[in-house]
Length: 549
Ligand code: HEM
Ligand SMILES: *[C@@H]1O[C@H](CO)[C@@H](O)[C@H](O)[C@H]1NC(C)=O
Image (tube, rainbow, N blue to C red; front, side, top):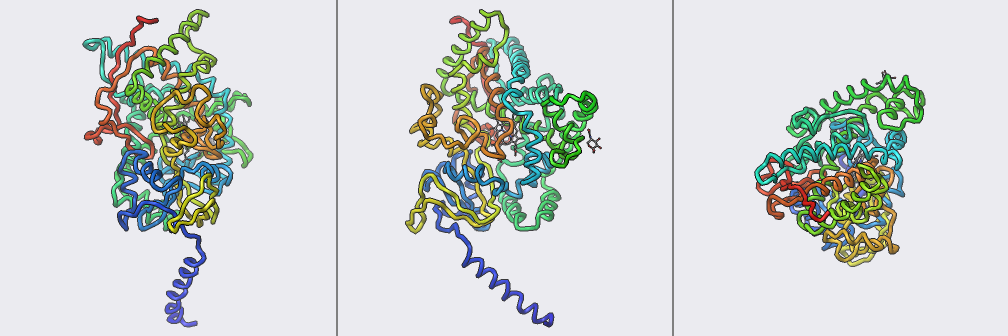
């Protein structure tokens, strides 16, 4: 065939291919959802520029638990809070749903090829290496480290209020807890002192300050368009484009990577020889596991040097910002409902009396587990303000989503399952799932720890779908890529909360309406009119009266 003929035939072949694809493909066009605002960015500006859970909550209320949202260039995405569909995607389907490719690129740029940056068999291997560090016994053993970080923060706050007029002061609670959590993960995972509570200017703490805001908050329309073009290009090329885009956001990602990689290298070097010499095959801390995996001969359980360092970078990042945000939102809710604070303080002090009576100076794991209201407040807080309101997945093949509740299509047809084409992008609506009235009750939209007491929410009455790893919430996700550190996080929150509430009374230093739930991959507190000042939650602290106890 002559070249000219081939060139002439090419468009016809291409056209036939697209017509064929169109006729045979499964289509999402009949799923209900908001009308697209623009060809270039669809509903994304609405979704990403409103507060966490705001746009998605509105759409779920209008269209149900499965909503078709339009992305840039008319690409349809499914926003899902349906329990059965989520369970299928995150658990039962195995590795059939990957994370979005663009997100993988950014995750790898930030922390390397560790747990959050790999897929399929690589992920399975890495997860197997890491899991033993995060069991129930391993997490409980961290209690003294979390208590130590809490005490240190409390000492600093006491110094502040004692030198302030009227013995009260306003602190940016988020910044403080972020530093306490960084120190805690240092001790817990690497036996290392980051010194972030002692010095706000340590390079590492400074680099993480406002990181998510700087990278993900309020994406420009141009960057949305750019990211959505990148997904149609070959993987290596799109990674190359993103890495070399010269955007200040990517520069920020790079400099954090360089710094955390350097810290990870130092941490490993300090420990590796001792761990390998020691020969203790039972050590299950993060550091021992990864150093031994790097030295392992067996490909099924080994980590490359690059992967080993990446795990440390991920632990440092995932292990502190998430907890810090959760704690900040907890204090926010307790300021809006001071009677919850008082009730919680009473429970803590009753337990404190018992602790002292038996001659102890600190709370044990058993004490913490026997404080129902503390546990209820922590669960309610994780439910009501999930740090990650949305996670992303993409179908690797044509698939069929099961549904807990049938949905009505735009043509009026009612379906009990939803076929989706390969490549379909999915956003799990964690925020919306955590507020489903069929699971959490008719008042699911209000912050009410009592729902967890006296038989708990509907979860205990047979609606448990077995989706999330903790308390039937989807806050820590579920299945093979669920949060590996959830036990760390729950215990750390419990300890921080009980220790601080015992010592201090908290009140909001700004009107509650001024606090925005800013969505930047995680949900952070910022102040209306001061978004440029970054993450902040100004809280007035004063010593909690001991008149009663
Ligand atoms: C309140 C605190 C926390 C919340 C709400 C949280 C939430 C989550 C969520 C939703 C995911 C899944 C992300 C996705 O599928 O795209 C995740 C993954 C992960 N989390 Fe957490 N997390 C918290 C604390 C922690 C802590 C303390 C650590 C480490 C000590 C940690 C380490 C990780 C890691 C390594 C992954 C990736 C797991 C994998 O892909 O196999 N997280 N987390
Ligand atoms: C990790 O493994 C590589 C390859 O075997 C080795 O060169 C390196 O020294 C190891 N790193 C550490 C910190 O043990």
